[in-house]
Image 1: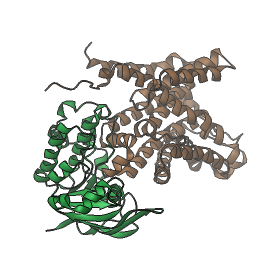
Image 2: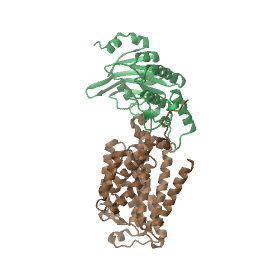
Image 3: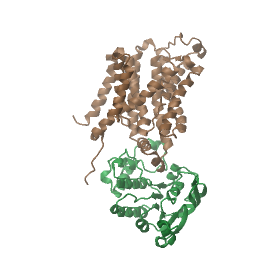
Image 4: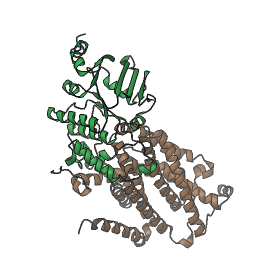
Length: 247
Length: 343
């Protein structure tokens, strides 16, 4: 099985705070991998390290076998690895359709592309993906006027628009009401199965992550606590202790 | 009247004004030239300030550089530079119309190339600053360039330089430059209208709304930002070249790099009209210039007070600007859709 993403021995500290210590994870192509851990365990820091927000202290990150720890955020994004944000980020003063259009892949953008109109294929794809997340009827509304949950869906659709190979989702279900969550799990699975996008998901909702992920890593206090199948993680005493604070 | 006729009537009306206004008011030709120049100022400022969310106080740099570049080209072509330095004030820079126009055209092209290159170099550096830091840096840039220009002997240093005299055979300079600036406004307006409809337009909007997100989506943010400034610099250099020749005398601080007047007015006019809207800068610049001239002629001594008061009123009651306010009030007329479609 080919590894799409290999994180080896990554450490990152901010001053005296060790956010990540010697973390290694592997994301095989085509899988859905989960990343869990109590608040402050270093999950988002790890995401930030992977997508190039800050330099690593130690360690190596490889994407499709290529070392990426020295690249900057937009370069990594153009390789085909995207992240969504815990605090949802969309372009508020633009319509949903415009949000989608500008999210097309920028992998092979020349100067000529920058001054060209969007092709009918892009328009059609934007509509199709908005339909996929259920926002088609709102496509001409300002993205900033959508509800929080709808903005999350839009952000997900924007990520799909970009044709990523690997998508890092930071708490995709946070702030979404329980009935919508089921729909979102279904869509995440379809994005994986139908569009062939590998997913690495941070999630606090145990029901969601146990349902979704094929393999789970659990962080606590910046260290790798446990990894394994969802069922193993669920029954791992260390994981339960970490979550319930038995230290 | 069907909605399809509206733009035609609007553009036709503006075209008629552009053609006949200077003929109807020959005494105001210079003011009309400056009025169109103000529209160019507001339009070019709005590229960064309105569409991209980068408040630049240094765009005046490109105005002055374009001005100096075009005037220097005239001197390079037709006059011995030593001769010009010795007798700069009394020296009569008379040219034939052919020479004048050729020098002006070549000077504008050279000026535009220099300004675009300068915007690229400066932009690659300081466009990585965000928010207030960018604004302060460009403010410093505007001041610094004016002072710097006053030390360069080649362009007359602090005592300034003279542009060639407008050839008598070509009639009125005011009329010529009224049309020149009107054409500049039209070309700038339609170029920007087209640019905003391309990927470039959405990209700079995205940078305005959330630059971190744009980066995370793989957008070439630096490239787009630098290009946007280059577009701004390109059109401003023509405005500078035209104004230098219209004014006849180029002083580094008062004419070429007047940061406290033109430099600030660019910002005010765009905000007054409504930044980030297509027509806002046009409306804002016209309203600003006309009221300014009106206050100047009727409230002499108090004109700046009246102008300041007007700006305060606009900022307090119409914080989105004239067109921004109109867009909030009648969003449908601006093509915004508020209701979701029933499926």
